[in-house]
Image (cartoon, rainbow, N blue to C red):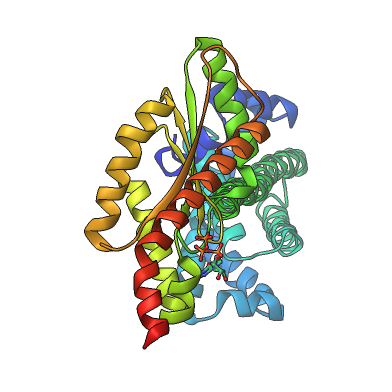
Length: 370
Ligand SMILES: Nc1nc2c(ncn2[C@@H]2O[C@H](COP(=O)(O)OP(=O)(O)OP(=O)(O)O)[C@@H](O)[C@H]2O)c(=O)[nH]1
């Protein structure tokens, strides 16, 4: 529940029972209540003088004069003090009386009246009231003693309530700053988590193409192989290398080379399934881990789709691709599979170069004969 939805009494858990037990604690008896109430009419005649004197003495203290600040505030305080003195001699020290004392404590704490200033003021007021009782009951020594003792007890009762509000307020401040620092710690933890995740993604990603980088290829392929082995499913690794990439770089510039790499990576991303893992192996080489896919399916479906996609953007670009299937009978290690796929890619590239040479030979001959 919000603090502002509770009364001060509720916040401080002060019930009628607690009030009665406090009165017992400070030894406030029925006789005390009665004597204070009996002198009330006489006290009322003296109140204005007492209040006037009290504030004369209070405003002589520089810290208090500073806290009071102006004539309007002083006027309001005088009225409040008058009311308080009447309450002291009212004979009713009930829940409303207690609530008013708590409120006074809270206001004092809020405007920054230190406990020592509050206590000094109480002491001063008490002295003035005791003197006043002395005058009023000059000729009734027994009643004077009784009234002064009752007033003393009531002051202690009031001070205990006001101090509870001070303490409660300090505890609230501590609780609030504890809550704040806990919130801050949670927020910080969340930020660290997010940043760690970002760093992890960055460390897994190839900056140029956005594909996974080779660092985790072995680990991911090993996990994929283990999962496939449990279900006796095939896994195929396709090892891709761009043909004549060096030539593109040399003749059209490094930026154009980068553009080609991104085009191939984007095409790979577009035609791959969610469960396929696509890596830039390095330079112009890529490795795709294709779970639940045979070598035949990889050749006939995956590679064909990939080449179609690439050639939509780069009509003359070709790739050499090697495949290696694992499972469902045999599951070599990740290193072996990558090595074999790489070998197959080289064989494929060798064939490509031979064919390409045959195709380009007459042109070269022509060039040479020019
Ligand atoms: N633009 C660009 N070029 C790169 C990058 N990484 C590597 N390269 C270049 O890629 C080229 C790869 O050379 P090769 O492996 O001989 O490539 P190739 O010309 O395709 O030769 P084959 O593989 O035999 O077909 C080298 O010129 C590298 O400098 C990169 O991030 N961006």
